[in-house]
Amino acid sequence: MSYCASFALLCLCLVACAAVRPPATATDEIGFVRLEVTTAGARIVSVDTEPGRLKRPRRAPEGAFQVDVVDVDGHAMWTTAMEDPLRERQEYVDDAGALQTRWVDHARAEVVVRMPVTASQQTLQVYRLTEAGGKRSARTRLATLTVTW
Image 1 (tube, helix red, strand yellow):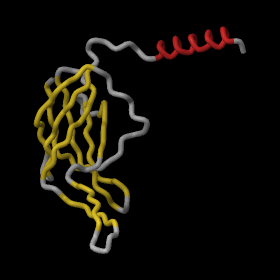
Image 2 (tube, one colour; image 1 turned 90 degrees about the vertical axis):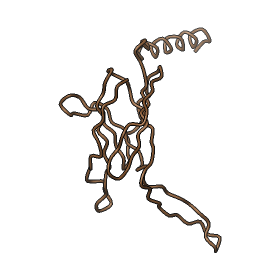
Image 3 (cartoon, rainbow, N blue to C red; image 1 turned 60 degrees about the horizontal axis):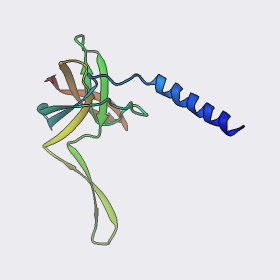
């Protein structure tokens, strides 16, 4: 293939890729919600927004702590998950020089959740997932919170 043909093919590919992604609008925003989480519930500490658009995850979010943005009927419109902020994995070197691991449980922790801003007010449902038989099975709702941007 000649140089000109290769260049033309490259330009065509770039134009096609640009056409696939919709242009950013003035309303594209990412919301940052700082939550204080305890074993009994969760509360909003602060909220902030920045211009931009969240990238789509390559795989479904996993973790023992889940936050859903729900519609008026309670159906999840957007979900994110992460490891339980109340459980911290610590590694240390024991007296024999071997690397060891331990889990430390905390009574409270703060976590920042990134989410798309789709309305001036959104409802969040915060869950803690528990394991049974090596699989995450039960969801315990910690809180239902309203975010006002």
